[in-house]
Image 1: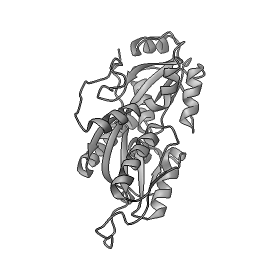
Image 2: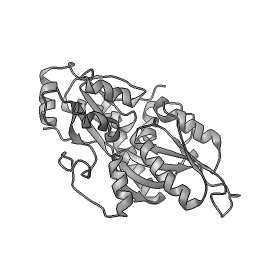
Image 3: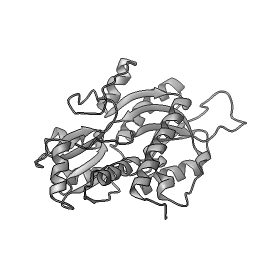
Image 4: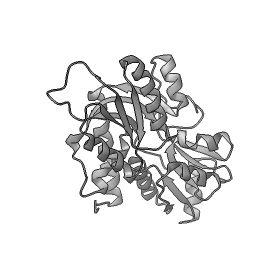
Length: 288
């Protein structure tokens, strides 16, 4: 069986490089998180959880604004254009690490965004309709190999799409990719069998899973998820942190993985390297 190797989608909290004139006391007013994905996504749910706790800690309002679309460029452009130290970006790092391999000209520079905190790893799953006969990744590979081009797939834009596409190529599999702007629509289509595979955040497909309309074949993260301990993954590692926060993040389909800017920056660099390898395997050259 081909081993699954995907980039992990980290929940990133990013901010414009601090200006020299920034006051030591921060925040001085309301803080806004701009989110790259829509309501109901793992990033949205996790950001709202964190925003609520930060509001109480800071004594200032913390609002969340969803700006989905354009492979994350809509939100990132709004974030950079704000040029405001009280406007932050909450995004999966996979939504921007893939940009240099897709777009020749970007509306922002890498220096415009600086990682300040890693909050969690979004649980990314490979989901299929319950009606699909495949009960494991191995059986799915065999089915795809026996029926070239018969299966359709969708994935979260960015690193997850890159890595799954590279997996298909390296495994010698032919599947048709179906693009979606709204990730919830992809999950709904998966439930009725319009598409056969969806590589996405667990939070997106959770309602269909609970309704018995989809099943999970794998968790693509390197750590086992507490909310689905029986779903196979590449490794089995667990960290111990504040119990209340861990429990609530787990319920939103995320694995707590707090870290500072140095750790987070290293994670992003590692993810970029994996995506670069996938882009090379796929022969992708930025053209837009």
